[in-house]
Length: 118
Image (tube, rainbow, N blue to C red; front, top):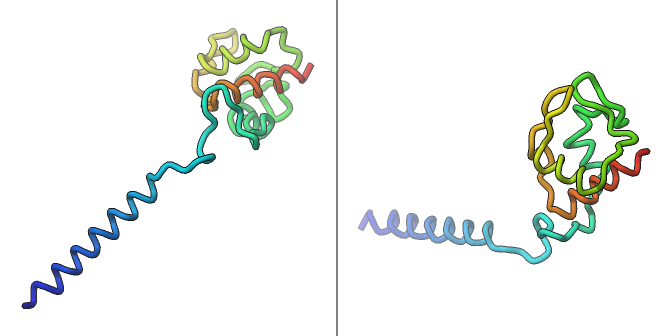
């Protein structure tokens, strides 16, 4: 008779754990990262730059000893997106790929924002 309360306690705990796991991993519509080809409505390219790029390229995009200036780049949006995605080896060193892990549309928006600083 002493094992029955323990059995029900374990069974109840297991059910609660399964429910918790189910609801944590339940997909929710409209949440999460933007799908490919879609920019999140609240995507802020300046904030993305500050978080992912400014530590090397400087808060003002004018470069640092570690990375070149991004002001006045003579590149296309597609070329900048390619650099964001695949990285680049240059005279100042290497920019590793994947420093910004947004969707393709977010990378394009970030590239357009960078290129707007001419």
